[in-house]
Each structure stands twice: as structure tokens, then as C-alpha cells.
Image (cartoon, rainbow, N blue to C red; front, side, top):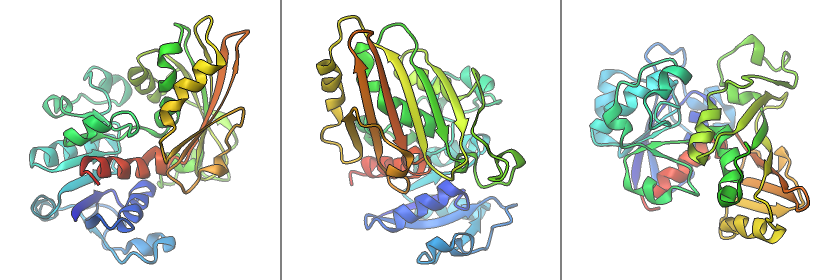
Length: 326
């Protein structure tokens, strides 16, 4: 049984990952941690989230002694922390010999020049970054199994790339257009006026400048136009993508491209039947629906995931299972 330490366990994603690992007999929780200055230190997870009343674990401050205990006792650490915090913690635990599953953006780009532009810091650990693998579970399983530094993808990129990567050989140079809507839990647990449920009305944000655009483009190998939207619902993402395919592409070729998911227990693909968020919330699943117009060469594909599950915690859980051969 592998022991996992979870840092940032008081947030939505950290708590969700805790619940998934507690329910998996292959794993045990070494400990749940928050920053030493957190108001949640010393509290029971169930006090913050009564839905997890079956989990009798307490949030401990991440002191130097706690770090030493993690290194001595854990097989891996999962980081559900802010990007600049993950940058240092991931490098530290990796260098101590642990497997690291980082849910922030601190190790998603191989190119260090991307970090000042999109995350506001210089990447201070290029030697660890060089070992990082992008944890898109359905596409990078072999690499996830063979490295100890896994960068779990962002929620919007997971929805978008799951839909687009099967089509790579059919794409033209025209940029795929991605319009995606996320529930407010994507903004995290911290109270902010603009993400207060009473203040939220469906609206685009980060237009032509969101950090997930280059993440999608890098992993797809092609530039995209990505527009995120904030929706007035708690959890889930629906990405609707319009893409031009190569001249002469047939409907049968599109169906064949998506057959890559035929054996997947998580990704469901249906032609002409489009998903809705309620189909996937509280599940690790991705539902894809597509329709192709052979006359114009345009395809529309919609991708639905739960942003806290397949977009974060359950994909981290997938990566952990892949890495440890479970």
C-alpha cells in the first residue's frame, strides 16, 4: 500500500483528492497539510466539508518537522497549492526521492521562458522541470509511469485536449476555436467578490490572454483560440470546439479518429449526441459529442468534464495509479 501526502488539502481539489484516495484500497493517506499560516490548520477535514464526515483526518501545518515526516514516511506527495508554492515544494520533495503529482501550473511548460509571461515568476528549478511529464492520463501513461515528476493538467486543457488530440492528423492550419464554460469552484475556495455566487453571471474572461491557451497549444502542437467563461453553477466544464478539417475528410475518418477511446472506461464518445455538465459532475468521466459537415469540412465537438474531478483530483488519482502500476 502506497502512502500519499496531500498538501493544500483544505481546498476543493485537495479535499476531493483526499476522498478519492481514502476510497482506494491501494493507497493510504500519510497526512493532510496546509500552510503554517492557514486558518484551517488543526481542523478536521470533516469540519470544513461535512460531506466527508466519514474521513477522520486532521489538517496539519506544513512545518519543517512535517516535511521531514513526509520524506520519511510517504511514497508520493500531491500538491494542490498555488503555482509559486508548488514550484518550491515540488522540487524539494522530488529531490528527496518522492514521486510528485503537482496540480498547479508550475511544471506544465517545458520551456522556462513561458513562466514569467503566464505565471509571473522565473522558473528556479530547470533540472526538475526537465524531468516533468504532462499528466494527461489517456495520452501519456507510459511517461507518467516512468517519471517521478508529474504535472497534472489544467481543467480547461483537459477538456479541450481530450476532444482535439484524436483529430491531430486531420487538422488544417486553421486554429481550432474553443469556447468553454466553468463552474465557480474553478476559482478556488478563497472568497472573492467577482466569484461570489450571487455576483456571477455568464461572462467571458481572460480573452486572448488566458494562461491555459498556451498550455493547450503546446500539448496539441498547434495554436488555438481559447475563450473561457465563468458560469453560475458550482462545478463542471463544457467546452464547445469548432475546427476545420482537411479537405476530403470523411465522417468515417472522424469516427475512426475517436475510436482511440473505444476501450476507455472514462471517456465516452457519441456522434450527434452532445453532452451536458450534469452528465459528468461528481464523476471522473469525460463525455464527448461531435458532428461533422462533410460539405464545409467543419466539425463541432463538445467536451464535458467535472473541473474538480477529471479536471483536477480524479486525473491526479489516475496519474497516481498509473505511476504505481495499480
